[in-house]
Amino acid sequence: MRFEAFRRPSLVRRLVLLAAGWSITVLLVSAMVLALLFQQAALRRFDEGLSELIDNLMAGTTVDARGEVLAPALTDLRALRAYSGRYWQLAEPLPDGGWRILVRSRSLWDAELSAPQDLVERLAAAPGEPVIYDVPGPLNQPLRAMVSRATLPDREAPVLFMAAEDRSPIDRDVRGFITATAVAFLLLALGLVGAVVFQVRFGLRPLFALRREVAAVRRGKAERIEGRYPVELEPLAQELNALVSHNQEVVERQRTHVGNLAHALKTPLSVMLTEARQGEGPDGESLATVVERQAEVMRQQVDHHLRRARAAARTPGRGERTEVAEVLDELARTLSRVFQDKGVDIDWDAEDGLFFQGERQDLLEMAGNAMENAGKWCRGRVRVRAEPLNGERLRLTIEDDGPGLPPERWTEVLRRGARLDESAPGSGLGLSIVDELARAYGGDLRLDRARLGGLSVILDLPRAET
Image (tube, rainbow, N blue to C red; front, side, top):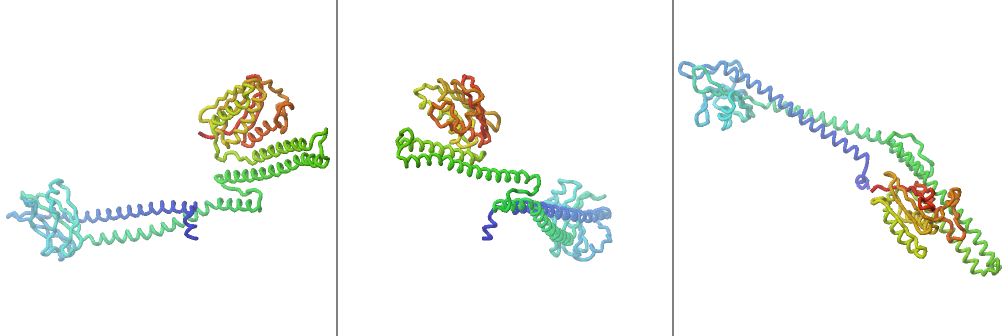
């Protein structure tokens, strides 16, 4: 169970691992760079000592009357003690690339300093520059050696001045520095990781508090999120409060619709029960006729309240997207067949890539009711236009060439059950449902005079990104 919990994504763990990983990487690279710099500085000081020894050799070396090379009497006691770790020798390069030992320090005793096979070539390639290399000593201790080439007065052949010293103390110092640096940086890394954990936990404390408040709202212990949060979380808290308010509003609407539906069905049921007891309806109507008429009223009421319930529960912006041109094309073909006897010409146009932010069925219902209403009252022409208003809204305009409607009745026809003409078929719910669905999506419906002479229904709806 604990292993499964560890495998689940964790914001705290992610932040801690990222910060700790970056900090440890920086510390590791810094420690390596410091160790390298310390080693180079130590070797540079070491090489300065070898260079000073060679300079002293060059300054004191002479050539006698026989042409023999005479080394100076140096006061460095280490060079006088056998295998002391500080050595020097003078050599003469040979034509075959080797060399011949001329003089050597007493510390070498019967040994000699070895050198790379290409030493003479390297010295000749860079005149005046010494050659530095590592070589095993007489007792196999690690030596660092330096060789310089120079020409002495009264001697044509050049002389190789070679000096070497045991580098073990330098290596020990470098290892000690690396160990101390590693321990110090390890402690620093542990401190940084602890600081990161504390920082993340402390920084995310408002998020944990928000989670507790949301849980309290879910359990019914609170109605809203009341805490004050940082600017990064305040919008989230506001959106959660808006979501809670929306859900409460939806529940209240559903309760109201259920109550309205029950109230609307009482009258038809009472009429049917009364007529069933009497055996016939008013004006001598048969019981079947009364039942059929009242059942149709009940069906219309049920259909109306179901649509209102769906409109009330609609939450815009849930990710659905519907292509407007496809819906208008389908409606135009369907309504052309419905109004075939009337000869209605339905002209529609929509920009390519225009999408409605919502369900296809809702767009079919809004556009279909408005277009059916236009086809019912037009003389022969219905025009539909869909166009973008901006990046977030689109406009759907349905016009007809019918008799139109006086402006004082525009508000009336949007009420439930309102009808333009009682002699025309229908329940008077069409534009009311369109208005409710549009408002549920955050849009709106307006009526205006059409350019064709009749009524213009204008729908502003949310637009989805392409």
